[in-house]
Image (cartoon, rainbow, N blue to C red; front, top):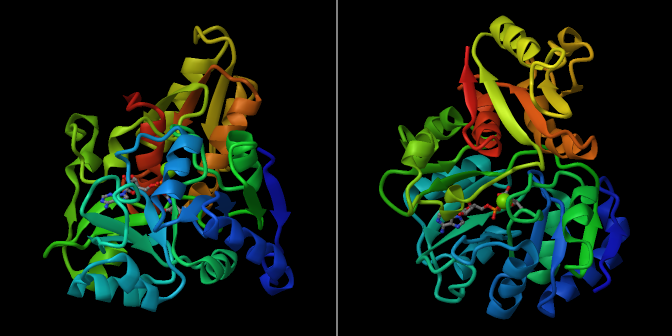
Length: 352
Ligand code: TXA
Ligand code: MG
């Protein structure tokens, strides 16, 4: 199929309302449209149509038991998607919507089992990105996973969507780079105590300021805890991986740099072509030990979240066989970055 690429002006999306309406029509007719959100690009379809939802799983090569997030453009539409709203859900919506927070609640019977991956709960969020909001206003609730092939890093630019899904979907809305760069934080609020299922730009401490102490799903504690039924089914699948394999080196900054230099200088590694995932603060130390790319500034961890998926894809363009990556702190947004990075590395970590 021909995939139509439509550029929309992020700052003045009303100028491009015709293109947005065209895409909303595709969704109403059970087609697939990739669109920008403030987190990553999503691959959207009509949340109420099992026929349309099946196409998402097919285009991405996604296992059908991995449920989707439903995106709404206003709070009234929430009642079309969920069955009941808990008190903690209300508080978190007030605090963080529109924004990069997904809430898991009891599912409304209108939502087909294909959308919820067979679960009786449904993940829902109200995005901040204006282009996404305008699209959903025109089409109604949109179910959308990240718009990458299953297992690949999530797309933060339209060109990443083209790389993975060109000819497999009807249209892509290109409105530039995604503001946050990591997928939304997911909190299950369907029970009494909220439970963090996936960390993101909204951090645990931000959530706990609103609803008090929350549970952390045990799959987030490491690979030994990822059993056959983590609460977010997506957690058990291979994720975020570029073509190259990855080793993360974790510890005090100076020791990490020393270890990566030792692992990459001369013929130290048995890999043909090596990549080094560095930071603005450390990249000068690696000289020509490999393809050195900076993921951002340690003093501004948001920049690391913003760049991570793009940089992982860039290493593929350089055709490196293996990436040695610096690790990040286990706090704030850096812990969300680490959650993605250690999965991309298949939990291959060296502690120094
Ligand atoms: O930022 C985001 O969340 C992006 C943009 C496009 O909104 N979407 C996204 O979707 O990251 P996806 O499909 O790549 O990740 C959704 C995650 C999966 O790990 C899935 O298992 C989990 O959400 N999930 C969805 N519904 C769930 C439910 N009812 N209970 C538990 N986990 C659920
Ligand atoms: Mg995804």
